[in-house]
Amino acid sequence: MRRLTMEGRQMLRQVVVRLRKQSGMSVKELSKLSGAHPTTIKGWLARARTEGEKGLGEKRRGRPVGACRKLTLAAEAWTRSDRQG
Image (cartoon, rainbow, N blue to C red):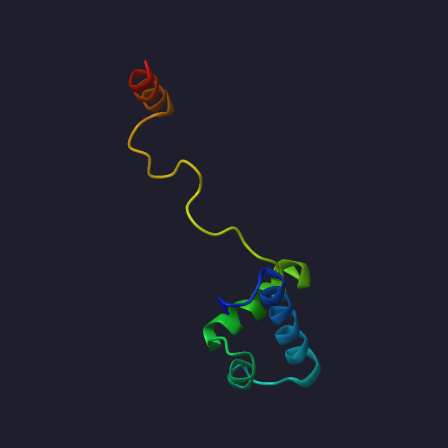
């Protein structure tokens, strides 16, 4: 999965959901076919059920910008300006 491009991952999710709808394959079979973990497949199917196929796109990953900062923005700006001047 990590080696696929963003478009490739999205297409794989859509194919898995369509296979489940059309042929009724089990999660185990879909997992073997796609190479994704069964828990991942279950998550895709649940997301498709609640959000539709539009919800199968990439989600934002990683920490939010500014999370886990030790300094406030003002203190950080002051520190940077102090070093430059």
